[in-house]
Length: 408
Image (cartoon, rainbow, N blue to C red; front, top):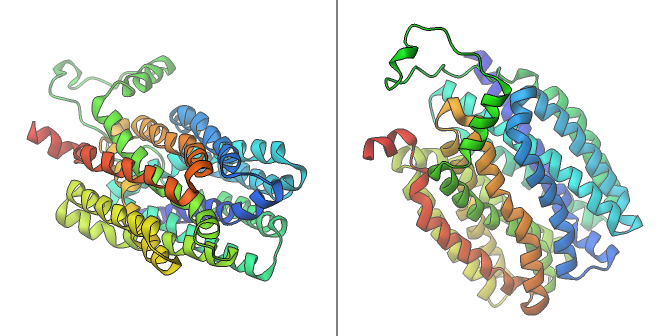
């Protein structure tokens, strides 16, 4: 059990570091935008490069994790992400192309890192025998809060984007390589039993699994109705979360008339609310179940969005950001747990669900940016409300597999 606790600590570290990386970049988006002279749609297209890298990576992540293992994948991708963030820290001074290229690599590294640490998190969750995935994602949120607060401090103190992001990049690249040594082997979960529908396998040796078999299994996952619907559910919550991360600072400055430091502080409030929801969420999930909890939280996020968009001043926007973040907190981790319900197919299903979910990061920034050019970024956030309504309608798909099969 001590080995499992050590692995849990290492998974927390992986999630926290990923959060620090994401929020460190996001906290400096307004300054990078101003340096490059970009409109909302322009910065949205720049952010699209990060999402595009993530999507490419996620399409390959199942095979990457199967070949390298979750530990080596996180270590390698953490180092690559650090290099990419370091490149961003200098590249923005030379124009848009270096930033776009560096963010694409950042997104690629982040995508495979994300799937690998979720696979490891699911292994630890099964070994512990209780819901802990939301708390791992709370670790991500802790990292984002830390990154946002450091970013706000850096803005207030006049620390350059280059100095801030370069130091952060080096620390992430070094720490992540050492933090994954305590990961459990990827086959550490319980071995799935032979299904009663295949009696010819009883008492026989396990078949040899070839690369072609793994490829066919991965492609078959894309045809599973439940997996695809869970992916749509995750997409809706990823859009909700990503819109807050990418646009709260910008919309506070442009639409609510706050200073850059106050805008970044509102971003930190959003992330703090997500952290609280993810930390205390497992008790609610164990008591009331996934479906009820995520539907209630989606409604809370809708209320927060309405207050953020329609509130008459920045104090209302702060309260709106708090409820927006709280409501968005459990959607992504619950979707990952739902995708990993069956240990035998966890890696491929997590990869598929994450790939669909990350389409929100692919389409979200340019959509909000394009709408922002016409109706302001704040009002463009109405698109988030539409996706939250979709998440409520499809939330039944995240019911644990055992319960869903029993219901059938």
